[in-house]
Length: 118
Image (cartoon, rainbow, N blue to C red; front, side, top):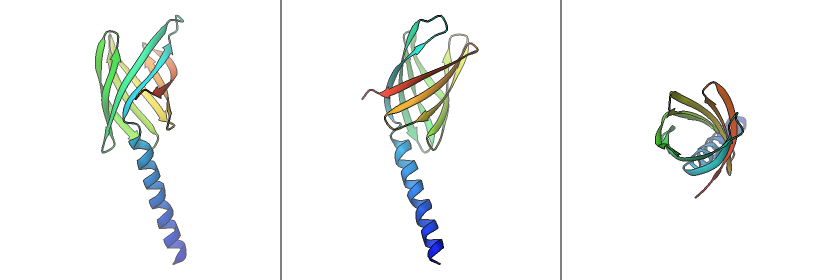
């Protein structure tokens, strides 16, 4: 009986911790991305998380683009951003004060780190 209580308590604590960490993904995040031609591209995102669905905006020099198909699973998340000539799928991992983001853009696989800006 004690084992069942401890197991249930551990799962509940894990669930609460995961929920609290994911909730912190909300807000503004910034970073830079080094492109294959060695140019630097400024990245700015505003993330909104509601019931496990990730939405928000990617702020680009060409204008803002909506985040679509956003999903969150613990500290891992994914979404798409419409860019000129198609979509740029993004996958990321949330680390509390930073995000490691993998982006596929025009066939190139790019990686960067974002930090909270608010």
